Length: 409
Image 1 (tube, helix red, strand yellow):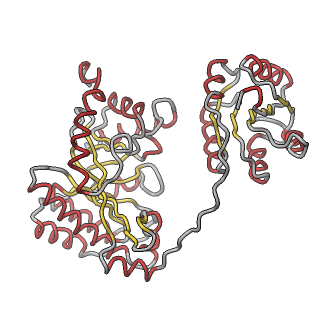
Image 2 (spheres, rainbow, N blue to C red):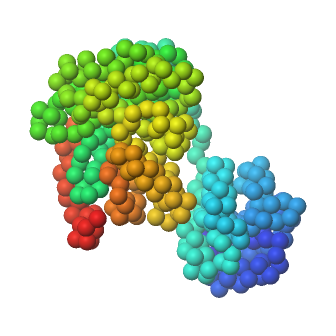
Image 3 (cartoon, rainbow, N blue to C red):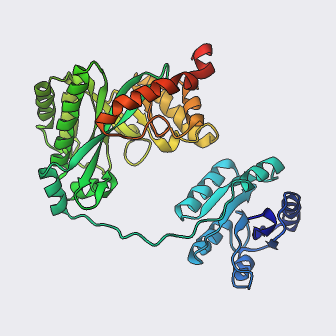
């Protein structure tokens, strides 16, 4: 669609700002403009023959109906266009508002502070595209506890592996084991569709043990092939409520011929634990046996400073929400840097999750972070695809190391 035909609405209580934005948009080729000095008037315009706009430039701080309330009304109207937030509020306020818009599933091109720079506005507007028609709603498959119990018993759970690489030189230093359910009818089912089910119905212990056994066998196979990788396995806090879990892990590792130091147990506390005695005993004993312990998704949920104090973790994984986009987002960058500094003070290794693009990679290369993982590096894959990926990674690596290698870290 040509810019002149994009129906654009400006909502701001300051008449001068409306005039200035309209002038800026006109110079950029936008002709189908409507302006409103209140959210209520803007919403009433939805009922006119022109219908809802394709794009709304919205001020946040307005009397009567502020921009946040206006967004909620957009949801009620089933708004299918896009938004640009414009405000004199600080960056953190704009970030919070942006997060809310995205949580409402409304397309957000971005946010800008007043006065709006012409180049920044033009760059955001260039990202606009008509939203595709919504596909027919997919039927959600609800899996029951009995289905999952059968899957565990019948060997339908399989491990995929996502590589982790050293940021200093790009060496592949490990993998994270990520379970998948190879359903005989519905195909590959991802863990977000069955892990909570397993925890709710007392199946998480059996599930984790299946994943661990498979990961240990694969670790030994890689070792025999001359590939030395630390293999990480996700562990639920529910697993740690069983005192014999530490002995189970040690026994299975010994039986598989895998050294304890080659295994990392990644712990995410998705639910608060009322009694810490069992998990504290299990994790302390595992560290005594020299298994690695990683606090996963640090900074989210209950994975926090309290857990660093209580448990003997030797690795910290910074959650992807603080990694992706940190180079341009001051708040994320501050949280990332603070987490990294904290880990350094505690003499912990640091893994950055969620490396989605080259900008994330370059940002991390300049930091003191140890290891990275994410889709920019590799998606989770079956074990038999790892050799081919290693070849591909070797070919990509020289360009990715770039001038940081020459300059040093």
